[in-house]
Length: 69
Length: 444
Image (cartoon, rainbow over all chains, first blue to last red):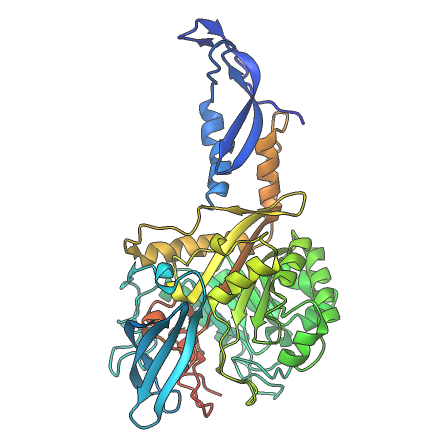
């Protein structure tokens, strides 16, 4: 499956590690469902960047569906 | 051990006089036991098996707003209209556009037949739609009968409902004319119909022979084919009767799932003993917990009784529901949280508002995405695309008759019939008939 959700601007640095974020396949899990998506992640500590657009857009829609709201 | 759970108000099945009723628990069974000074004692089972009766209750803070067209004079259930005692707003208004029907079902809450009768004209019905919209402030609308498709001007009626402001318009039908006429579904859709509430008692001829008086299985399938062609949302509505089709519940659900995205859900209605029903029928209600448990058993655990929640809109004892997403492998995955609550009283009005929106979303036709995604689709996109077409609701509503009427439930009712004379009458009050067939509200 194709997976991608990367911002146009990939110029992000993980502040604690001082390392540039890299595209990475990440599993999002909520209420028993698991979703595989590609997100910018810190190659050192694994922290991921979830943009506002994703959080308030598709991710919110999925949450609401899973919650049946 | 026998225990008294609650004392409620009901009516005498013979004279409809108001009487006190005890809710008596014995093991997992709860009965309503009442006595009329003149006509003696009556006992009816209202709850059988898990989940426990008391765990299902959800107190609500009643809605006292909105327009009240009648005053409280004799008290519930004799002042419906709605009267100031009523504790819930209208979630669905039901308008009967004809008393005529092309079936003569042995079982019919409306007692409809094939007699000519006189239908209101489109102008009168339009006025009624406008009055309902003004009175309720907007709600979901169900066009019912009789059999509404008997009216040649039904597209005009649907259109008039839309003009009055209703956005979710549902047609309650046996589907026979939709099966026979290839073009009818399209006419209804183009007139603004959202959803079809299709009488659907099983997936073989046997339940139709008993409940409808003749085999109808092939006609039901043809109606569905014709509805699928035009993209209308369909809810399969099964009347569930003891020893008739209670062993077919999962079969109906499975069939409905196979008909996605046309079929948006299955709605079970345990047979109630009002209107017309065979005199030979034993008064034996199939209760909500039995349906939940049977769905689990018959589906071999694909569905769980614990999937189902009490309603936030009507009284807790009136219904259950659950929503699922059917995955590509055909397995339903339950959406939402389980049946748990802190059981603090909730606002009835808030429950009604949520229910109006949720019902329209789930029972209406599938919606297409507004815009193509501007990135490579991922799991989130796949899930959202699937959810647009493959959410599925399973629900049941237990109507009340003279045997099990609980006036607290009646006051919490959100499904209101709008009779031709004006006002709004809770569905179970409108259809209530005494043992001799006399009606409290229905005329003609």
